Image 1 (cartoon, one colour):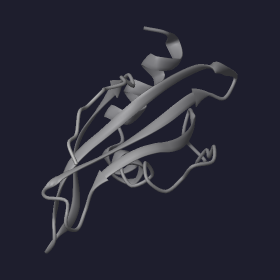
Image 2 (cartoon, rainbow, N blue to C red):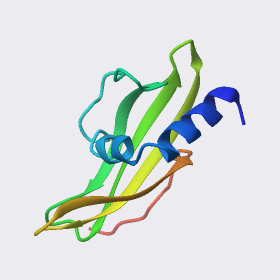
Image 3 (tube, one colour):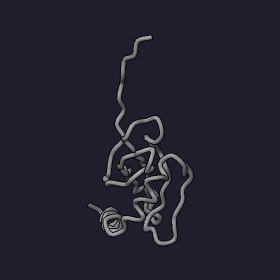
Image 4 (tube, rainbow, N blue to C red):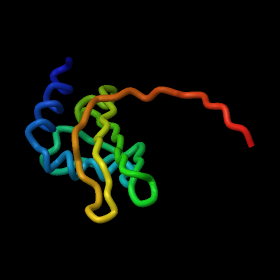
Length: 106
């Protein structure tokens, strides 16, 4: 694990409130951003969940090292959604994008 990746791991593990905030960024923030104390820049790349989509809720952000833009990682924030309570953060993990081919009939 690189020093940057370890720094991000430690930062997120020590800051649940930051994880809760970033869980909402997957579907909204499509430009690179960096909050004051974050050791990384990020942008939203995917999200799922919310009203009329069941109880699953997640978002994915792409982070990069502000000192080396070639060092990038995807992070998935997972939680659940209930109409009476909104979304609730559960955990996070590093992920990799994978293409999937599906067959549909219409």
